[in-house]
Length: 449
Image (cartoon, rainbow, N blue to C red; front, side, top):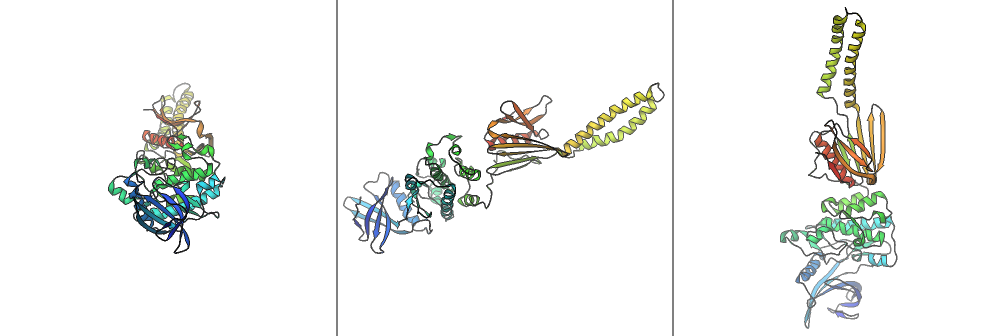
């Protein structure tokens, strides 16, 4: 539409082409009035294939005029010009100095984890600003081409051509599917972009910087991008990045502010418990989990009325039984042996009751799961038994019934080992616990009815 040297509105002189998108073309130009370079985005009505594109363009101009953030080039002007056989629409912004992340990677730049963290931090600060506006503004096209980086590290977010006013989207109950494949969150394909949608695009962009591979080229595991074998990151940053790339929006960080706080170590990511798998009322099990770790503490069963009753019964019964047996067998020949054996049997009953009493009160089990390892520790009166293993060796997590009609939770490891826990829990508690563990470590579950 324009060539270098063209003069627009007697003010903006075209310098060169910056880029061509799906609906518009962007040029670098000189603002002759201010003696500054600007970026001019142009949409031609004659070349328009979809009226929705004009609506998006006008929306972009309107929203840009309301933005004020150092990471977003300042809006300058919006106008339209009629020429023979065409009408053209223009958006003028300050030009962001630097190169796009796409061009940085093409030039061979391989950022360190620290540099990627810094880029993530700056972009999240921009997204916090956008998402906290009234109404929230969703960019919907976060990708390497739309992020400009200076040589000193400062970044800018550009190209708001896909921007969405979320209140308007809610009222009209529909949206054009816009974005770039590989960087689009799954909900964008349904036209349901929300503020956490931008976090997915950010995660895909960071993954591109770390690997120089397009996110769409990675294998998937249960709809999630399986990137861990291809990167060498600290565990906490890998976990953080994995959360950005969660395909289900409810599993992602709820906001850019939350993602930024976790990245900066100001708080831990707390995974909301599924509403379909609530802890049974009255359960004494303690379950704690964040993005990278799950801890479970199964305390002793405590004193229950039947144990106390049996213990008191035997304490009172033993002396009485001893006196009665002396009276019955005292006159018989060999009575000492009969008295001894009878009271020994009684004592064994008392001793077994005492063992059950102590076991239920003091025995406890503790489990810990990370993304790669698991630990089961069993405690009883100062005795500790610890088992370590690898998550990848676990075949499944299950609740299975024993021959005596009791049930227990179990980790099936390698198909040959079984690590049991939670045998004193109720069936509801066992079902809940097995579901929580299976979901966290990504393994199948089996609940024997």
